[in-house]
Length: 463
Image: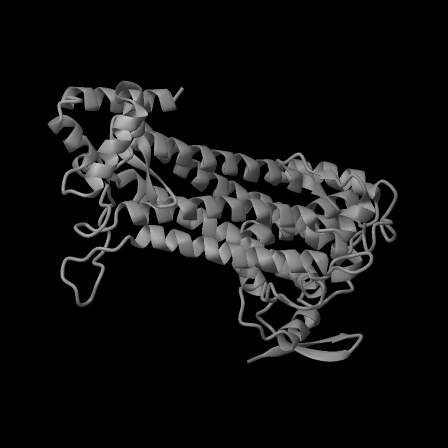
């Protein structure tokens, strides 16, 4: 393999001639041989970093701190990175341990060397375009990287929100479809009161709709960025006016109403907005898991369980038991919630472990938050399209479970009186007949009255 030599403050490093990264990137690869996703595998983060570098390059040209002969090819290099053309050169692991310097320098080196290519110069000819002096002009890892992570999370959150909206919409459709399916409502897994399956799905829809709204609210808070604070929030190292001009260009390039954080020192020190987003994702996936576990219970059987709903059969459920079909999509949804909860625990720890002027554990936050956002986007859509949309109601079984329970005793108290209903319940416990069968046998109620009272009680509960 042919190599070129780069000399940095720690000495010479051999770089493959066909790679656009430099010595900082090679040192990171040696120091952090971590089996994790690398920068080039997170296109949202790559795009955000490149947009920030492009905005800063344009701001520096506007201010005259870099000339057009450098700025124009640098901006074109940023465009190439935004379009995904340079991902193979972005090789630093997301979980690198340099507090972000390795990631920032990987980007700086690749952009500098790509700009050099555009100028018909050789990679490494940093006298012409330098990773630090030109690409990183007016910036620090400490303001660039958290800004980029915020923009990446904003983009990924939009995909997660879209998937959650599909779940909410599908649940609302099922609520309407099942509005006349009568069933036994249960509390503490014991017989409760009559209701409709549609009413249960109303509750499912409401919690997902609310959770989606709160993820969206938190997504918007990610648009306040620490860019311009440089190393610790003072802006030292940037030219006067740089921050405002850079934000103007970043807003234009990204199409987002980005703004500086209200307090630059707060923006540099604290990652709580990521923790809040993670918390909302944990809440949303927890709500989906609760619904998924309900589906597992309600579809149990088909002969030995509740069997009140029928889930779509998406794959065989056993290698030994013929015909068995398992609730694999709901089980996968529950597993998602477990993973997101674990990710959130890691994020909470990383956010609280920052020290003094910055939090250098932002890579743990990015890694786990990206993972949660990717997983929510995937599993929420799958939950809706491979499970919820195909659920069917077993109306006969639902009505049987309702009629065979004591849940209807309460609704007949006004008609028969508390004492009479109590006697019927006690008597049914000592014989093979249900409460309703005894009441009909004694000619206290008719079959038509039973259905009328069920409908009345469900309507009453819906007021």
